[in-house]
Length: 222
Image 1 (cartoon, rainbow, N blue to C red):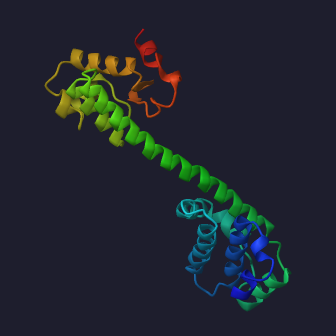
Image 2 (image 1 turned 90 degrees about the vertical axis):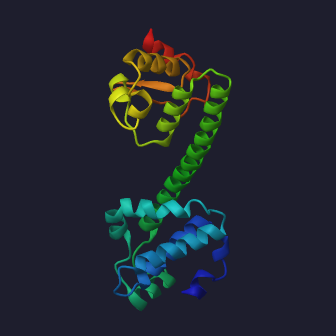
Image 3 (image 1 turned 60 degrees about the horizontal axis):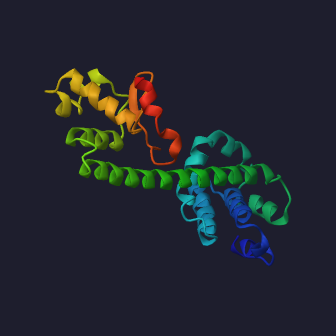
């Protein structure tokens, strides 16, 4: 197996394709053990990491789990020494469908890793922006605290009743009037920090991504 993976000319193969073929070959070698697929994916990840794809490998396994039926259908039917010898000889089943699945998973992983990094950066940028607005007194302490709660996630759309009666917002607005809650929602919406939703308002996590958001919140109150 090692000799085949490092045979002359294999270094000229696109790393993503080589990683997929190593994955396929190890599946062909699998003993009677379901955990062997994990070993095959780990080997694929090592090839990709060596080629400069460190972030993608952390999420590619998620793609295989979500497409486990297609993964099993495209895996080599032969196993053990016979399966590996068939792969080495280029005989037996055509690995192209499996390689195509791996490349599709890699493309998904690249997009997913990029989005996760971007989401973390957006979160940091929004935290700093919220703090700047508070320090410049464009936000009250309560409005700032509300934005921080929404940024932490796990909350659905919020409205006046949600702020005044539901946890964890009740801590901020339980003793305030509905007029205060309405005023805060309007203020944050007009600043483009909240986006209108059919069930209330949600945090606009792309508020700093471009000028398109400006004025969008105010339109909801027009």
